[in-house]
Image (cartoon, rainbow, N blue to C red; front, side):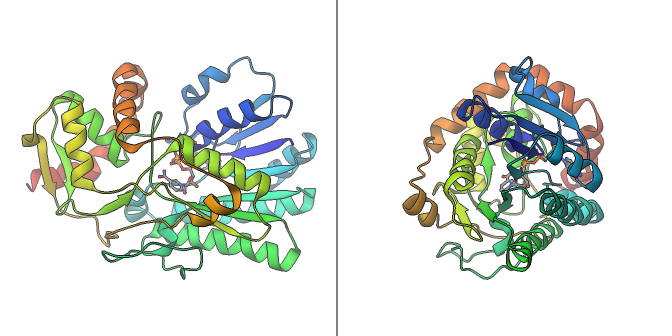
Length: 340
Ligand SMILES: NC(=O)c1ccc[n+]([C@@H]2O[C@H](COP(=O)([O-])OP(=O)(O)OC[C@H]3O[C@@H](n4cnc5c(N)ncnc54)[C@H](O)[C@@H]3O)[C@@H](O)[C@H]2O)c1
């Protein structure tokens, strides 16, 4: 099965490309990524020299280019990760989220249909379901209720995917996963942000009371679920993916401080993210029971390993943080930290 993976130079996409190459030694993986601020070819360094991994720098909104790639490489299935992925950035400016997540997904669907691609897998998020109170978990049947520009754009994309299934009979599947962590995650996201600040003894900016609950999953477990759904998921269906690791942000931050040998005086409660969803939790019974998926990573060990990875790879993080990331960090946190 020849695959076209979008966003394969990003955090989760690069992990998936590695998995896909291990799983299917004879199949081609065409990796399409525009290399935005979040795309990084260093994430793929271990695939250098792999003749079955073809990296193409291209934008998913370029429908003609997508169609050409699908036809030239006789692509059987698309695994679609490419997205603007950070909620805080969507609050600063929503337009790129509409462009890539909605228009980009639509262009890719149109190209897939024109090329007769057998299966289209949309990588989505638990955030499409909105926010939970203290009890319960999102099911696949939970009505969508997006609350940030990011989740609104992912929800719209999911709707287009379903519309192409129902209207055009396209074979589509959607995975909706909870918060990922692991190596190669861009340091705007909670866990690498806190790890890198803790290494340097810098303040750790925690939104609001820090009691927002996220359901953490190791990136490799997410990718294994995506691959199972690609192979064996039922057409037209949605599969929730989560590893039942609900933690308030403060617990995660305290654990990171312990793992990095820092004390809690570094914690700064800063003005909250507007519209911050209180709690996410996933019911992943369907992917477990129907497809036999099981997460392999224990959260405490996975977090310790992730801290160790960032400790062992300072150059990776330094290169990212020397660029446009520094401006973003200033915009997002300088005035918030000054307010504490
Ligand atoms: N990170 C999470 O916790 C999480 C959880 C659930 C679902 N997801 C979904 O998984 C996917 C990947 O997330 P991530 O955390 O790896 O994101 P990321 O920001 O690390 O990577 C996104 C990648 O997409 C590429 N890209 C962006 N716009 C593009 C365009 N127009 N054309 C081609 N490439 C483009 C970027 O260059 C980057 O390499 C996203 O669809 C996201 O919504 C993420």
